Image (cartoon, rainbow, N blue to C red; front, side, top):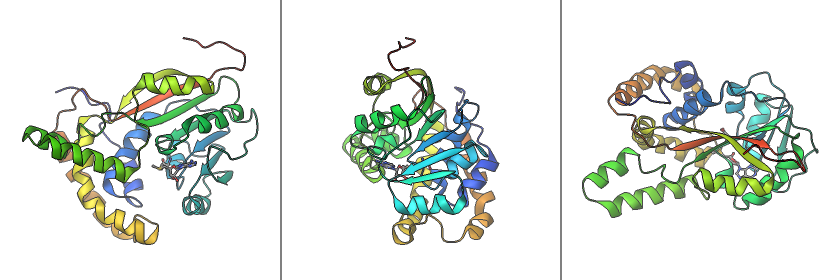
Length: 279
Ligand SMILES: C[S@@+](CC[C@H](N)C(=O)[O-])C[C@H]1O[C@@H](n2cnc3c(N)ncnc32)[C@H](O)[C@@H]1O
């Protein structure tokens, strides 16, 4: 069986996420956390599209970081957890940021949602110190191809249904930019960034488990639409965590990791002004 880049998943991470998020989302965040830890992100860190801040809290605890998010409800939640030393509510495309201030930046699954991506990157670049690392986690163009439902529909000769399912999922997740590594390099370079390293994450095993877990996660999605939160009672979640964790591991151990990748983790560098790239 091909080695999985994502597994084993940490039960500690899964339990922490599952308390507040649907199992499908918790699984993907665990994979991203595993991939991000160990990457040196000098302070202060700029977290772009920070959401509720849980990712930052778990990926780089006790580091000085600023969060930006366009959604006031997310900013309010992040504020309550005191994850960030400074929080900005607004669009990454036009918020005022201090110049040459940040030692690094991260955008965990946020930039693929921003229509004017060039404006966003051009606004971020001057706020970073020259040479600062910038980590992007973004979906690949083929991320839905290795979902269980899509693969099974294709195998059954139902290609149109498989395509409709893929497109429906992208609409739900509001993905605008789904590019390969060269596509990202072309967008990053004019804004003053170069890709130093690209790591494939979210393999077929994760994608299958994610897709199966999406079905019960619809309940969480409806709860979020109604209340703004994924989960009504974290205590009830604690009671079911062990069962879901065991199910997840049993299910995923039966799936081959496969060659595809659902997301890129791109480690970029802010090209020094007037300087040359390393490539
Ligand atoms: C999929 S969530 C990821 C949240 C967070 N990074 C995490 O790891 O949990 C994407 C986030 O990007 C934010 N976002 C989307 N467009 C944005 C923009 N133009 N400026 C700032 N934040 C934005 C959304 O409000 C949302 O919180």
